[in-house]
Amino acid sequence: MRIKKDDTVQVLSGKDRGTQGKVIKVDRENQMVSVAGAAEVFRHVRRSQKNVQGGRLSKNMPIPVGKVMLVCPTCSKPTRVGARVDENGKKVRFCKKCNAVIE
Image (cartoon, rainbow, N blue to C red):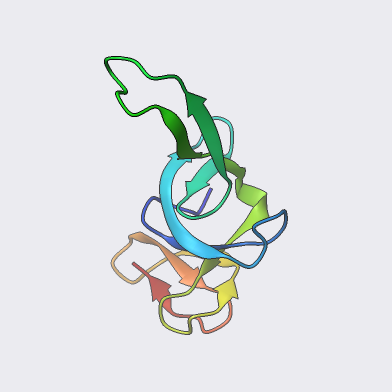
């Protein structure tokens, strides 16, 4: 999986298609990511001592990693991500469109 936390991604399908947001959480075991502003659902909560107000709380649901695409920080376009070893011997991610290294 070449998507990490705090990457900007674009949703490819579903009701939130086309929206961009930051990755909040990555679940590598289940191949899912949580994106801010996408796949929000409401949880209806009864009033209690913990939750004095009650009502509808919004929370982000995970999206399959195949349904999102990384947005390159240099060319600002959604792109596929490759991996290669740089001259220092360190593995880096790069943009397949503009060939720039993604930090």
